[in-house]
Length: 115
Length: 110
Image (cartoon, rainbow over all chains, first blue to last red; front, top):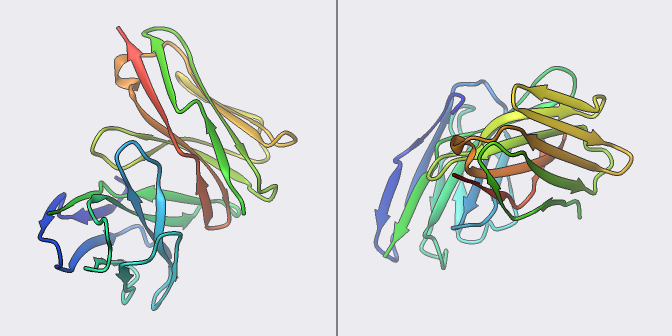
């Protein structure tokens, strides 16, 4: 999984509780991303960060929050405001290869189940 | 806004036959086109990519082609094997902005 770790692999929470998903990378990548994937669906962008202490909303940011205090870490908090939080969450990072090419790598994912 | 269309959404091929997945993109400034393979319960893995200055790239049984004029790119898998069963995503990228297709679920039939 290219030096990106996500923990835990499976996470269970009760409705109404906030939960934080961890993402760490040792690839020295500047940009990090969070995606949500529902069964049989594609990847939807939640938040991304291009540099430490800065982040932008993606397509489905409502009910989520992030922080980027360190280059290596980009935790995602799923708040109680997120109406359908049960999903597979993927963290990714992007690093510059040769030329102006940016290669994106994914972590192994965290499956969150909220009941 | 920019988007990437991927077809088909589901593909079934007999083991040993070839599989082709096609994508089109809208952002003419895209210069990098990666393909990812996602197995059940895992994160997507980069399996092959192509840059805008190249028309074709091959790596063993997989190959990618790019037609910049038509804004089309394709993934070709030859001599398919059971372990090729997975979901495949195409993507088009410009700088650190990447847009994914919705994925193709590939079934390899025995």
